[in-house]
View 1 (cartoon, chains in turn purple, cyan):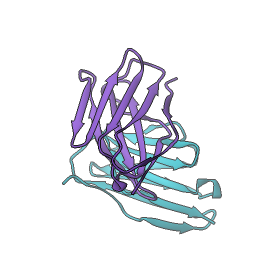
View 2 (tube, one colour):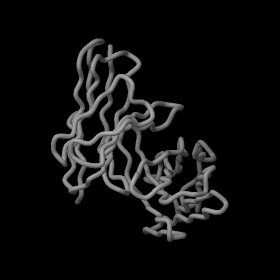
View 3 (tube, one colour):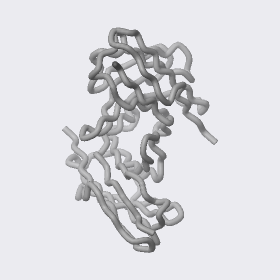
View 4 (cartoon, chains in turn purple, red):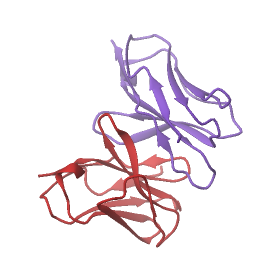
Length: 113
Length: 108
C-alpha cells in the first residue's frame, strides 16, 4: 500500500531564506505527483504537477523535482516571504486513468517577517 | 479561470439529518472526487466518479453516498449524519486536481 510521508511536519524560517520541503513515497511506480498549498480553513491550491515523464517543474519562486527511483520529491521555495506561510501537501497517483491521489499529511510552514 | 464551487463554506446539522454537499465544476472534467480532511489523518477519499451516473467507492465510503446526474455536478450525501462525520469536506475534479474551497461540516 502506498504511503506518502512529509518531513518535517512543521517548519519556521526567517523571511528571505531558501527552503526545501520533502516528500517520500513507498511505491516508486507512480504516474503523477502534485504539490498543493493549503491556507487555514481553506481548500487546496495546486502549485505544481509533475507528470511521469518529467523530472521537475517550475513556477515563479517554486521548483519541484521528482526522483521516482528513490521515491522522493522536493519542493524548493526561493526567497521565502510571510505570504508563503501555509501547509504544503504532496500527493501521488499510481496509474494513469485512475487519478486517485494519495496525500501526505503535510508540512506546516511559517515564514517570519 | 477554472473553478470548482462547493455550495456551502460552513454547515451545522443535527444528528440523524440527511445532508447534501454540492460540488460544481466548470471545466468539463470527467473525473470528480470527494475527500474528507481530519487533523492527524490527512485527506481520505470517500467516493469518486469518472463519468455521469458512474460512481466508485473510495477508502471510507461507509455512511456516505453520491450522485452524479450531470457532468458538472457531483453531490455527496450523508444518509443519516453522525457526530463522527464532523469534518472538512473537499471536492476535487480533473486529472491534476483542482479543489473547491471546502465545506466545514459540524454535526451536533
